[in-house]
Length: 368
Image (tube, rainbow, N blue to C red; front, side, top):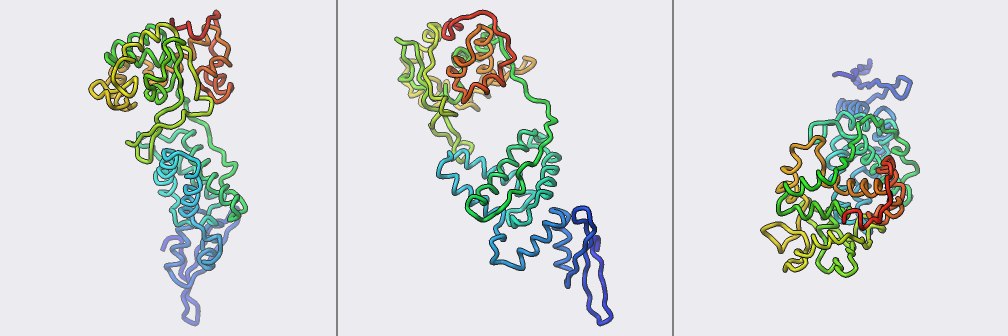
């Protein structure tokens, strides 16, 4: 059998030897039966020699705390995270493990088997794994997966079940071409809005306010103060445990809860919506009793409206374009940060700092 040598002793005993590389040295293990030898050989191929030996030790000492499995610590962390994370976040953690971790590292794998070498081998596998779109996984996706693995190990360290984190400090090559924001001109926004028909008011609103889609579609008539020309952003749509489940929760960050001053033209845009007998400002054309979902808006309006544009903008690029125009108008970055609800000023600088300011205007009047 490949990778396994059968050895017959003079007394008739038969043993099976597996030769392998353990780090920089040659090594071998001998077994009394072919089943165990085959199992060990396959472990070496998947995790490396050191990890394979650790797994065998774990099998021989089932009462050892090191027999904790990857699936076990994953479930343990989810139960811990459920005390503070949203249902959507927990669902993403489950999906991440099911889609990207367990297909390569089975849930029954003892955590003692996972060494730095095995995690690096896992990263190599991730880099070669195609995404659901047929392309390679983006480095930021791989970083997110490895960071989640690292979080699982760190939690075990915190509760005393583990002494070291094999995923700590793993380097992920950043060889992908980053997706650049598409900064739209006012004329382009108007054309998109016209092409969106009924949903054009939402396009103009997103551009003029910089709100995130989930924030805008969570607005109710009570959130609009016509007299003070302000919009209160205090909630946003969140994804639940299933992709089709949504619920109202707090905005993305603590600083995302805010009051946004808008221009007279934005108030004029919203006035017809304020007299509608609907729970939310923005809703599907034929179902005013329901909130508008990103998928509905994208499929019913946005995709057709931008299909001939190159580069083709995303819905979120309306927010990017809002900030871009504020910067070009000379509005200070701290004012912009507060207006769009960025967590810190560095976020604003990283995304938009390269845009050159021109002349100064009041943020609320830029779109008037």
